[in-house]
Length: 215
Ligand code: HEC
Image 1: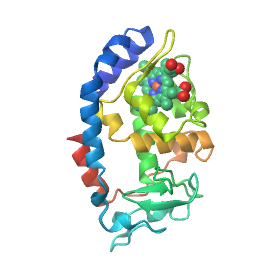
Image 2 (image 1 turned 30 degrees about the vertical axis):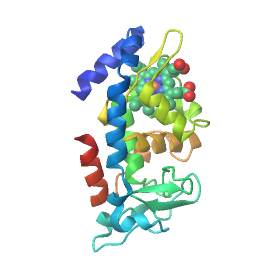
Image 3 (image 1 turned 45 degrees about the vertical axis):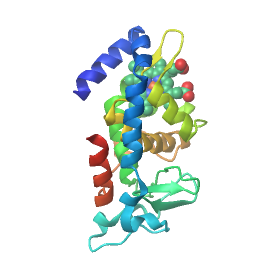
């Protein structure tokens, strides 16, 4: 369903045909956002929600959190909190270690980006004739602005950024898309699949939150 939908969006977006339909989706969109907010409720974090510098420990480290990227780089001081690396402000951030291993969220963002966004914004966020290079624009885009434009879309003279608010394949991973694109715009994450390695498993709490969101 998702592939078909995206095909339509890509084609419709490019011809500028999608404009009105996009705006009409507002209330359904809000419903999806509400569900997303609920799915992300803090108690899903369990032992990991206290907010320490270290991911929660378990018998199997890989299941406990994100130990493979403990020593990595983020957009600032970051803590492992509620299944993601977060800045003091509560915004999600990436975590990239020297060998190129990224936290699961950033990896997820990379995958989702190349499923949903790259047809217009180009591979690795580098732009195309249809849409701006997010590696540039994301340098100055805030978390709130990002959520706003991806949820509600945006129309320029002859180009359309579709509204994704009713698409769980995007909205359930909005934080991951954000951290991936921030890592690309910061220059911390190089272009290309080889820079993104999935060595880190999703924690059980994360899997629960994901399931609830995708329902
Ligand atoms: C159908 C083509 C298309 C698709 C698919 C698409 N976009 Fe866009 N996007 C655009 C266009 C065109 C603009 C510029 C709109 C404008 O400037 O008014 C844009 C703008 C944006 C902006 C704002 C950039 C700025 O100027 O600050 C962000 C952020 C963004 N897109 C993210 C995404 C993400 C994330 C996805 C995937 C979930 C996505 N886009 C999918 C066409 C697309």
